[in-house]
Each structure stands twice: as C-alpha cells, then as structure tokens.
Image: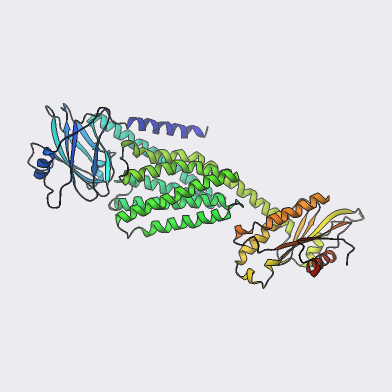
Length: 554
C-alpha cells in the first residue's frame, strides 16, 4: 500500500510529460543572424535576414534556434495564417530577453518576454521567452531578437493560446508534484536521521534538497514566490547546487562503503572527493560564469565516474545497501547530466527536459530509501556485534589479574568436571610501543585495528583480553581438532593482513601466535600466558609465525 501513492504520482508525471508534447509544427521557415558590434538595429536585421535563404521546417519536426552567449541573435520566422490568438515559445530557460517585431511595425518591439521580465508577470509560463501573437489574415513574417547568458539552442513552438495554457499548466503541475514528493522524502530522511542518529540519512536528506534546489533554479519554477531574491544569481545557483549535489551523493556512497572491509581505499576516496566537491561549489561564487559552468560540469563528471566504479565494487563485494543506493543514483545521474548538457548548449533544450529532474527525483526515492534501510540494518548489526565484543573482551583498563580470573573456566561450587580449551597469545611485533613504525601512524587507527582483531577472534564460549598494548590473549572453547585450530589461526593471520583499511600497511603489524591446549577444571591463565610469552621471545623460534607448546613445558 505504501507504493500506491508513489505510483500514482509517477503516473501523473507521465501524463504531464505526454501533455507537454508540442503540437504538430506549423512554422514555415526560420532564418537566423548575429549582428556585429554596433549593428544591432531592427532595420539592419530585417534587411539582412530578408536577403538570406530561408531554412524550411520539415514536416513532423520542430523549428530550431541557436543563440550565442551575451550576444544578440535575430530570427526571422515565417508563420502561416493565424485566425486566432497564438503563442510563440522558445524552449530554453536561460533566455534573458525575447523581443517581437512585426514587418509592418515602426521598428519598436510589440512584445517582450524573458528572464529580464519580472517573474510575477510570467507565473504560468513554463519557459521565460514566450510571446503572444495576434491573429492575422494570410501568412506573415515576424522578427525576434534573442539574448542569452549562455550558449542556448532549443525549439521554436507555435500553439493556440488555449492549448498552450493547458500544456504549460500541466507541465508546471507535474514539476510541482515531483519536487513536492521529493521534499517529503527529504523531510522523512531528516526525521529518521534524528531518530537513528544516522549520518547516511542526513546526507540523503541534504542531497534530495540540493537536487530540488537545482531543479528549481534550472526550470525557474517558483521564482516569483520561493526565491525572488536569487533570480539575479540564477545561473550561479545552478552551478553551485550541481556541485553540492555531486558532493553529497559521493558522501552518501561513502557511508555505504564504509562498512565494507575489502574496499577501504575506495571509501576514503569517496569521502575526499565528496568534500572536495562541496568546497569547489563554495569556491565558484567569485569566478566568471563560463568558468563556473566548466567546473560544475567537471565536478559532475567526477561524480559520474566514481558512481560507475562504485557499481562494479558493489557487485563484486555483494554490498546490497550500496547497490540499492546506486540504483537510485542512476536516474539522478541521467537527469542532472541531461539537463546540464541542455543548459550548456551541447544538445537542444526540448520541452520534455523540464520534466527530467522532477521525474528522476521521484524515481530515486524507493531505491534510495530501501538502500538506507539496508544500511541502517547493517549498522545495527555492527553495533550489536561490538556490544557483544565488549562483553567478551571485558572492560577497558583491565588488569592482568582481572583478565586471568575472567578467562579461567567458570567453575561452579563442588564441580570438578574437566573442560577443553585453547589459550592463544597474539603478539603484534610491529606495533610494539617505541617502534618507529608505530609512531608514523595515528594512535586511534591502531586501536581500531586491534579492536577489529578482537572482533575476529571472538567466538561462542570464548573470552578475549588486552594483555598489553600489542598483545591479545584469547580463550577458545569452540575449536577442538587440529584442523579446526589450524583453520582458526589461519583466519586470524588473514584478518591481520587487512590492516590497510585503517591506514596501516599489511606487512607492519607482523603478527605471531603462540597457543597451548588445556584440559582442566580451571585454566591457569597467568602461568600459561607467561609460558606463551617466553615461547614467542625464544630466539630459536624467532622465525616461526605460530608456535604450539605443551602445558607442561617450562
């Protein structure tokens, strides 16, 4: 039942997308001209445009236009007979001005639109450059002067006034619905972040808000109501929100890979790249507009590349949480990438591009939220495992006498039943206090590494103690046969080699293990541990990685 509202909203978006399709093209031809410096007058433009050969619009296709950045572009558009009021629409959100001139006019514009027109006067326009055409008798040619802040290319659409109003309102309603559902998902994520104290939910909530902000700035939705003070900085806000969204997406992926022991370097790479994307976005404000756009495209390219690498690693490591998060990441990558290329003029900004970000914002919600639930479930398992480890490992700053008493067999009063156990002493020679290697590493990283070794050694019925800074003592009651004990020791050596995820090269801990098997009602931990320590100190056994001694050895 929880999926039904999402499916209903998705259906409405599809209906709005279908309704946004342009009517059959009725424009006869389009001619374009860019004036030189000092030649930007209607008389000159009309004279030169009339001399150019027209470019006829093919049946079944829309007329196209191209506008240079910060330079005027003149268009001569030949229209059929219009028996009623029609609307001429230019499908690009970055057109600052669009001025309409008539062939029989006095050289002054009879209509003006674009981003320079106050947003309150174009509340129901899906594109800022929209011009109303009065009815005429017979075909005619109209002239339009365009000016854009960035290189722009799109379609020139012609539609009756009533049909255009319906299409525009449906498109705006579809965008509002998509962004509203995404905002509810962001609010839900932030509430869950407070409940679970989860950084992953915080990253997702902020990421969704950044995507919503990016979509609002790109499409101009709510400019007159939600962000009128930022209208003059709209293009800069587009680049800034793109960098922030890329950085937050990488930080969210870092949370998913942080618990994956086999990919520690990739997790750190995601964290560094995510923070750099956020800092880059903050540093864009004083730069020139073309530089801002190039940098934001580069940042999104980095996010896309790392996202695809994450897909490969998630597949190889069976990281389901990262897999679901990346599944939701795909529509966002496609949506933001498509809009970025359309805004930059690399592809035509068609009318359906307005619906890409709302559609992608809704499409990612179930994938991302399911991935976050899996991630929180995995974090809960880790916390439960650590609590169990604390119970097995005992309190911190435990003395050796306390460790010996805890690791000894629990003997009930009057019971003398002999039990079998193996006592192991794990010595990390490379982590001995005073070693040069140890001073090169962060102390917290060494502590986390030793905690991971204690977690690897934890077994049912076992106990673990911190015998010294670089030594662990383990009482194991699960493994009995020679093969089981050898397998357990091999697993400990394998775990010791995974120190790189803590920033410690695998060769530096230099683990050595001494062990003894005991069958007794109560284990003499202090005595046997001293024997194990002497066996590891024995110069004759210096080259042995693991040593077995007998309980009767001196």
